[in-house]
Length: 449
Ligand SMILES: Nc1ncnc2c1ncn2[C@@H]1O[C@H](COP(=O)(O)OP(=O)(O)OP(=O)(O)O)[C@@H](O)[C@H]1O
Ligand SMILES: [Mg+2]
Image (cartoon, rainbow, N blue to C red; front, side, top):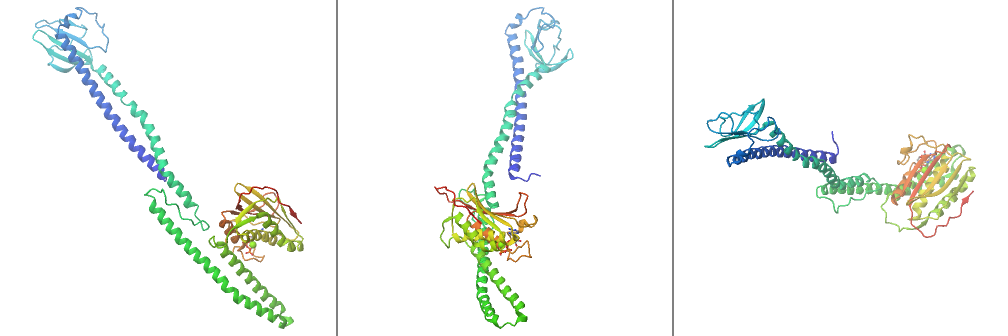
């Protein structure tokens, strides 16, 4: 029922402490009751001893009936051969004179009494107390012993919960780190300061991460090698086609053009595969530099400007920020260009494409907003998958967004793709990179067509 280890521990330890507390409580209650009863007995004995020592005469000869408090002890002193008590503190009570010496019990006036009888040569002394009063006194005393446990038990529950939570916090933090592991974040988990009980798990997870990283790297290398190997024969094919072009008879021109388009498509696919393999490669090959993001954005706009103009599109970059990113410039350029090229490719002629920059915490974002058809919501989660194309009617290899995602992950950034929410149809594609802090903060010039 209780799935959480923390809850299980808290409940188990709490119940254990409660059971110990209850057992302790019951035993101290009983002990205290027995002890109190022994004390009351001692009092009866002591009073009897005092009577023997001559105190009996101090008792008034004719005390008023029922004048004594219920809780008081009753003293009766008999002289030998006299039927009536020599002295009694309560004449309405008639204790059995022939009771055995020592402690006995007797019913007197419908009440149970504990009686101590002392036989002396000159007198018989009886000291008695109501059993109900004795019970009351010893219960009162015993109940007092339960207070500390009653107060401590809830405090112990709280302490148990705090201690367990504290001990499991590390496990919780580890869980968060394990959750953060994905293809783009295959870092081994930290092993320093880890409790010995968890260390074997961490080592196993780290070994698994290592194996995973190796196999991913192998796969990436294979793709890179395969794409590289395919490039040479494809270039040869291209050359052959170019050489053949003048010799193709008019009737075969159309089929020949299809052939050339196929070759060009394959070339693009191989180029994208190589880019993806490069974007997925571990960081460290090319040194990073300080990249002016607004320059990259305006550069990407300038690249597609001729196509955009030819198709009657309005493309512009606004709200540029003077923000730098520490990266390989070609990577950042490729990521932004892929988003811009998608916007141009999937927006019908005459549409509008806006690029803008915004800062959100540590990240600087480039938004590419178009007026295209957008993407069906159920297909949106798949757009970053390799080879996924939401619109098969428009030519594409389905790798562009995978490349963008790999580049974003490489620099600790992020990428998102959503339908517009301002009532117009179209996509907002955004890529964010961690900002390299700079002192100057002037706005860069705005480029608009
Ligand atoms: N701005 C956009 N508007 C509408 N659909 C888009 C947009 N951007 C991407 N898509 C859809 O997402 C799919 C995946 O895009 P991605 O860039 O990964 O591949 P591609 O454009 O098909 O090929 P490539 O970029 O490799 O040439 C596209 O096929 C397209 O259907
Ligand atoms: Mg694309």
